[in-house]
Length: 294
Image (cartoon, rainbow, N blue to C red; front, side, top):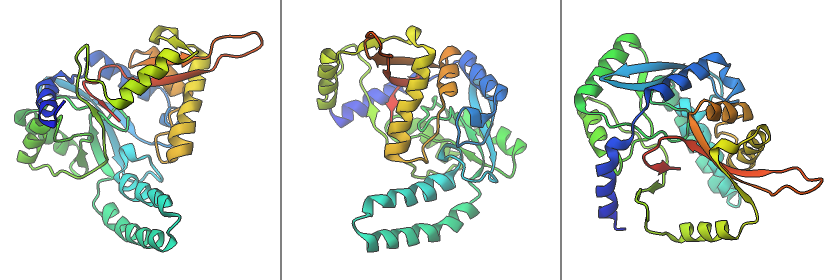
């Protein structure tokens, strides 16, 4: 698929990203029933419901005083701590690494002084990427008026916008005085048809799936052991291999998000053998994204 065709398809699909009221309410209720750190171990935030112009969103609130908070609610962690951690990739070039660390460290006071850590974040599902429902200019004006009246000393933040999937929303935000800040690289799967164009990685993955001795596990078949193993596998990849600055999702978080119908799960489980415990490999995701973004 050409870039132009992909962009056109995504523009046509932009309004498919919808927040279902029952899921927003379940998500907010969940994070108010349990301590946040029992669910995401490196996060402090308060979660509320925001209803604007007929839409409903999860809203996270932070006052900027939380020490070492996860980047999904703390721009200082995203722009400074995460960047500093990435310098490990230059370990073979100590002078360059030292220069980059010095530069990043010099920027830290500026980022903290921006006040972005003291924020009200709209549509924050506490994922690294949160697909955003389509917002027009009147809705954004209503959102801005409501939040600035209630939180006059906080930044209003919306993450996970990009100029392929969200051009109309971004244009409306700019028109209402919002500024765009670069955040992170994402990958977009653009074809939602029943027979999408096969990329090299998709072909490889499907070949592996055909050959695997593991059993497929559907969303209705996850067990307590599967939730625990899913958390272990997440830790091995996203925290141990990549960076401990990523969200520390716990087994309790995965289990409750699944039980409450907020996320769906699919996995592969090692076949049972006599004297062996089963150990699943899993993938978990939000139940209703219009585009998969990593």
